[in-house]
Length: 338
Image (cartoon, rainbow, N blue to C red):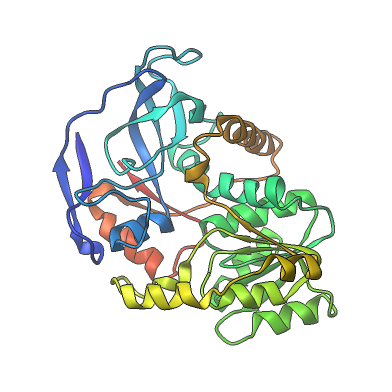
């Protein structure tokens, strides 16, 4: 099979398209002939050598795919060869074939394209788990979503909207129309405005009830400061450690240090919560992943959320896909066609 391989950390040009051995279906797994693969910020960090969970090169990244079942492992039931499915993967998605645990695999909704299906797993699970399971978002609460036009941001806006929350989003000005169409009530131009001051102004000094922070660095404390009493801050990314498409360990270390420390006394005196989310580390809780994936599919079936694919790139142009995200051009999901 063909795969996009990272042989050394660096800019997007480190990708090479190579022949790799076909995966086998181990017990509890299925092998999928990939048609589309999602591109996520974690892929960019792994390519740069800034993602702790990533194996050392040579590696094939990619956390979500859609395609057709080609092989079924021992002990797997409920699936058949040729079914159109989508799933999360622990790396390996940028390839023609991938093996995945059956408990993460779901049938593609009727009339959905492979591209739309590949846009579901990582972004929508992250958003749902952060907002609903961990964040306990309620109707009419104020929710602040950073990078609201990105992959996770788009999913979070849709899910928060389905709850009936009041959405505040940060984004570049050229994405305003997109966010308005998505139902964002208040848009903050992060390039020219101080989001902390804007959130306090919008909420009349009360603060946000829930914040989804993909920024990290010194922005984490600013987010904490504009939480309302009983507010929840969900941190799930470190976008601040990446600037441009080249690696800088010094910058990464500086941004980690800037995040600061939170003593339990400070948290319970302020009645605030800080919640960490990393969906890749929930592999030991298939009950949670399965339940949340089914809930997302129900929201899709009801027409309350709809994955938005911004651009597609052929697998051999994977470097261009990474640059597109580095340049913050995407509005919704970026997909590789395999």
